[in-house]
Each structure stands twice: as structure tokens, then as C-alpha cells.
Length: 429
Image (cartoon, rainbow, N blue to C red; front, side, top):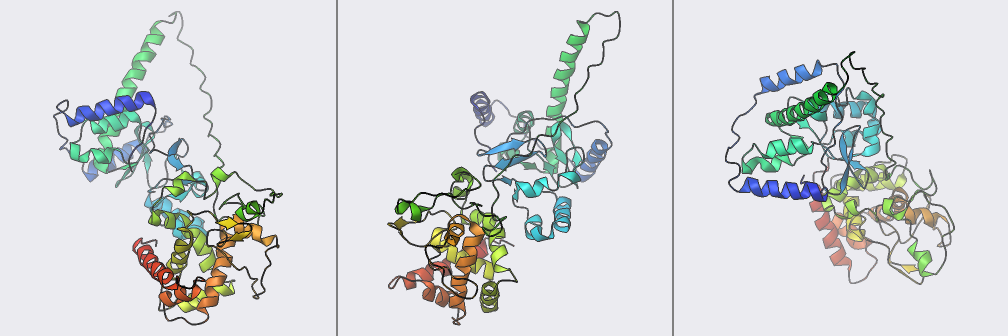
């Protein structure tokens, strides 16, 4: 993952440094490799240290912020950037079985999920790793950042130009361990020199008093946006899709009910989510769709999964329809004088209860369908399942019958079929 801009002074220096590297300023190529034995030795030495790991700032990609404990880069959408050590993935899967599908992926994790595992960390590092220099965590197969500016510079100053791309990653290969150590060694020399100067200036009649070191406090976890944790039924006011009711707005009606966040903290308001490609958005929303498609208490989900057997993968098939409706949550509702082209992430047009009774447009339940992702997907799947119950032969036929626009059915079916194949290629499992 590429690093972005991080302040004017730092950026100017970094640009000069990169230009220098591309010219004749540095001619030495990095050819030395640290073998596995050396990495294991370094890991063991670090693990035997009883001292606290000094806190260092980390350089994070553009659009993310550095979180000091645990050391991780967090997006504005509330996701901690991975990958994560295999041991932490396994413990996550054991401790949080409901999130097992997220735990075992090397993708980004919801920040609140990662924070629930912080008690497993030792000396600031996750299971499967040991604390290294300047806050990095060392494992036999990877070195986990984010890395400090000094470490990044030490890396770029030593490797060949073809390898410099790896210096910008959040996780380094094991043969880059020396760069983390070298930069920390230089920093330590500077600190010792400054410390010596300060001690020499003190009166020597008695040993200098040892300064009290305040207990390190762990910063409070930020309240990041949460998505698909609650349905509207569970927690009314959970507006993780949007805070804006465009249907009411088109009728010049005021919203007179409380919501739990601002628009910037919703899916439609998240710039990070808007910048993701289709596979990225699908991974982001995978847990949301899983809650709906694999709900064993939902007749609609059972009907849809039964139809999908031998035909399609139900998760990706549901996503493909929503992809065609709103590009997996990129598009706002389109309403004019109270008439909308569907509501919410899956463009619900007709809301029905479990028993099939139609819900009127005046019913307050439409608030949940408007603002809440899980609630909207649940009603959207009921519409899809009603068509699946008619027994279409494949996804193309299902999508063809699902489209309500005469003359656009074939294009709708072709697009859904195309998006399904693309989503399967994303390898969400």
C-alpha cells in the first residue's frame, strides 16, 4: 500500500530523498539477505527483553490515521489495515466465532473487532510476534509496522530501486529487519548524546535524582463508525447507510427522529468507502450480506439459499443484484415528490412482512429501510426470494424477472450476471 502526503516539511524532504535515490546520490545496492536463523535469533533476543517498548509514531497511507495502541493504521471508515499475524487470526476465530469469516482473512478488520483482541497483546505486539525496535513487531515470516519515518528512510537508502516499493508497505519481509534496527540505533545514539549533555550540566555534589516516569496510559479507543452491527429493529436510530431521508425531503417533510451519527460517519458519507473498487466494497460489506443470506431464522434467506444450490453462490448472487442497483452502496436514493426509484442500498420498492403483508408508505418502518443497511438488505432479499420461489432456471432468469422496468429486463439480467462473475473472481472467501 502506497504512502500518501504527511505534512509539508516531511513531504519536501521525502520528495528530495526519492529524487536523490533515483539519481547518483546512492550507488550502493542492497544484496545482503538475512536468513531465517538470524530472524529467529533476533526475535528471541527481543522477546527476552523485559523493558517497555518505546512508543514511536508511524507513517500511515493517505486517508488513514496512526493509532498508537495497538499500532495500526485506521481508515476514516473504521477499518484497521492488515494483514494480521496467523496466530492472531486463529485466536480471533476461536474467541469470536460469529466473526470467523473476517478473522481468517488477511484483509482489513473492523477496528472495534481488533480492539476486542487487544488483551492478547504483549508489550504492544500481537500473538505470533515479538516487540522489535521502535515499536515494530517481529515474526519469522514478516515484520509488522507501521514504520517510523527513520525506518522508512533507512530502508529506501539501502535497497535497490526495484525493491524500494516494499519500503512503503505496512508489513516488511524478514530480510528488511536490519533497517528497523539501524534506524533505531541511530535514534538511540542521538538520545544518549542529549542525555549525556544534560547530566554533565548538573551539579556533581550528588548523583542526579532519577526522574519519575509517569505510568503510560493507553489512549482511549476512538469511537469509529460501525456498520451492520445492529438492525433498526435492534437499535432504532442506527443510520449506518445514510442520515438523509430523500423521500421525505422531496415532500418537504422534516425528519423528527434522532439518529446515532452524522452523515460523514455513514456508508454514503465515507470517502474511504467511495474510493474502493468493487472488490474492496464487496469485502467491506461481506459481513452485512452474510447476516442476511445465512440467517437460518429467515424464511426468505432459506428460500433463496435452497434455490441457489447447484446454481450460484448465494452471497455473491445477492451482492450482484445490489451491485446493479446502487453499485454496492455508492448511489443515493433518487426521489421526486415522494416517488423514489427504490429506497436504500438495495433499492427496496415494496416492503412486506414475513407473512407477505405489504407495508404502507406511511409506516415508520420505512425509516429503518432508509437508514439502516441490515434492515434494508433484509427487505431487499425478500423481494429477490419471491422471484426465486417461482423457480427461474438460473441467475439471468431470476434477474430478468426481478426487473420492474419493461424493456430494460434483458440489460438488467446481463449486468447482474456480469457482476456475479466479477464478484466470484474477487475471491471473498
